[in-house]
Image 1 (cartoon, rainbow, N blue to C red):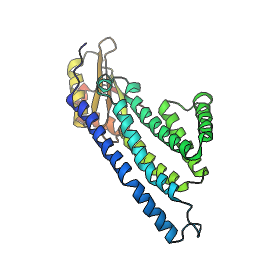
Image 2 (image 1 turned 135 degrees about the vertical axis):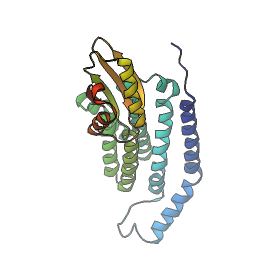
Image 3 (image 1 turned 180 degrees about the vertical axis):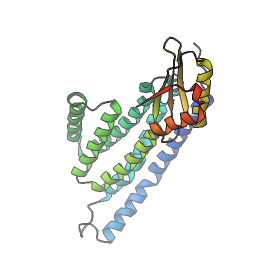
Image 4 (image 1 turned 90 degrees about the vertical axis):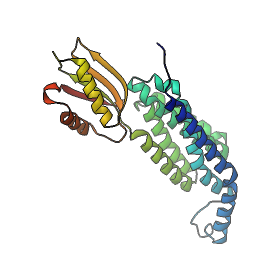
Length: 265
């Protein structure tokens, strides 16, 4: 089978790369000066003596670096995770959800790298042991769930190492990244009970209905033996199961409707 990669897939990778260059430029040229000014401001106003913060110059730089490094690692990972050829061949729910794990583990790797650089290799052994415990001794479900649990543990470790400000910033960044990843819900739609009905025509109507909701259709299968149609698609907005079922009942004529079964990730 010959695959033709849509131009929009390549443009997505180029756009992500250009954003990475911009983020790196900001991080490399502006952050050191901002960190020095922040440290001078804290020292001049006596925040450390008052016990309001323990940010010195090094910790101030880490506090400002973390948002940029987290965004940079997520963007770089997205270039690999959403490679044009990989996106072209995505059909199953596992393949569609896999890039989210890549991005979460990239963020976890960034946090681990900063912690090891700041506090020494001993922290790396602790994190390695915790990661092995989560992966092999705890039933945490899919790999992206392991990624979220690892990120939560690392945020707790940051706070325990005396950098609650960095932990707070990291939590905010991870919160919005997880939101951006999970706001598009992947569904598998089964339309059953279509005995004696033209599957080709019905598939076309359901396909057009999904396009009305701006859904991204990854695969479509028609099974004449089971008299059913199957779609794997992803919503552009946060749409719950009940909303989709009501939508299909509205746009599909009653005599052409089948039994709808929706599975999500």
